[in-house]
Image 1 (cartoon, one colour):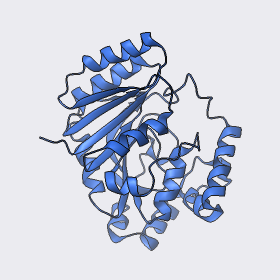
Image 2 (tube, helix red, strand yellow):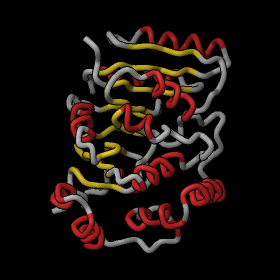
Image 3 (tube, rainbow, N blue to C red):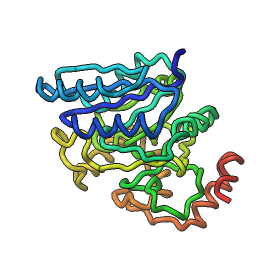
Length: 273
């Protein structure tokens, strides 16, 4: 039977971390999905270790692509998206670990993106910036957010193809760029906080990617502004308390509720109450 979801996992020089990702994914967050690992290390030893981790993963629908070179995280995601034959598409960083009790993780996120007003559904996690951090206890279980964090995203395959997938020229902040595009096209991004995993921040691609320091973030943020304009880029930053590079005043939760109730679809307004 054909799965309904394809999960892309890009990896580079992280066989041990990938092993934990795959092991916890299949043990704690089962579902009707296909796993596609995109391995990009030029080192044959690392390639063999990653292949061994993939072989030991007990899952019916799985595939591994050995690139032999680093095509980048966005390159890997777009390659799997182009070939995706399932109605729903997701990616997961290799630096995440799923926790017990996650049996409905994927089905809950898929249910959200079945609504054509929703462009992406995301979980909460242990280490990230913005509203997806699990310590944002003041948020409703299901609520709209304005920027997604790039460790995991679920979307409809054809819709995501139609908007061009990911922009690999904007790194870091590729997740912010896709958030701008989804917002500009009228798609909501929705988080279900009952979907949760552990996240070891900044471990994916750490061997070839410099840290997300403020100068690099400002540079990539300026690229987004040049591509989409100031208004489209900064409008969503009103809601995100972490983005000091936008020099925005952090809103209160009351402001957040009023913005949803004043301008969003009714079903989104109801989640804020």
